[in-house]
Image (cartoon, rainbow, N blue to C red; front, side):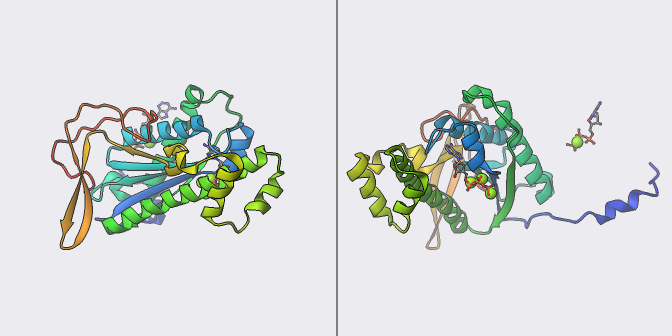
Length: 262
Ligand code: ATP
Ligand code: ATP
Ligand code: MG
Ligand code: MG
Ligand code: MG
Ligand code: MG
């Protein structure tokens, strides 16, 4: 086909393909979900239905993009980790970001009424970014970082909302917790509210992990360093797991023995 005289404008597009042979982590996060949660009367500190809706939307993303071998979610965020070898969209960052975040947002809205008891009042939006990690240690530390964030926020929020329920104003509760250590928050919960933080639901304390079912985790040692390698087991197309809640179904087409992370 003959090129039009306008074709040159294509040359202004910038290349943004991600470095090869690195784990590609795509994290999305709800925009203004503090307000969104209030507007939709989310239970405090954790609305389990809203968390499970996040898991469902993430599961829909994994179904579509099976190069994602693990996803981790907490609060209004989700991290998707692509195989190191993925060549989805030629590893173009803008294509990956925009497609994943729009599918996630659309799924969140699509499944809203299956999970939530209140009507959706306005369209939610999510931001997203990609970070590349070159080593398994970096990748594990990334997940540990997000999980530590979940724990810190959940401990604070559990305390905060207990104080508010007991009659303190929001500012008073905030003041009370200002500068407290984890141990002090645990004590407030236990002594004043009879809550043993350790007995709080795992999903609230740790977040949710979505994995293809039948991946068997193997720890392999390479010259002193330990790398986590997941391999496929028998594929029966059953549901992905999280902390005991149903995040939906995900199927895998890959063969037995493939290294999932690679
Ligand atoms: P930003 O646009 O910068 O991300 P934000 O208001 O979304 O701002 P975050 O730091 O992302 O701020 O925090 C998300 C907030 O959404 C939490 O602090 C909490 O108030 C609320 N939230 C999200 N999910 C839930 C949930 N399942 N249950 C209760 N509250 C939730
Ligand atoms: P890609 O994922 O690469 O974008 P695609 O299938 O979306 O693939 P496009 O080049 O974007 O391919 O073309 C969009 C196609 O969607 C059109 O070729 C047409 O078949 C269909 N389409 C989109 N909008 C309309 C519409 N309003 N009426 C009829 N067909 C439409
Ligand atoms: Mg944000
Ligand atoms: Mg947010
Ligand atoms: Mg957030
Ligand atoms: Mg198209």
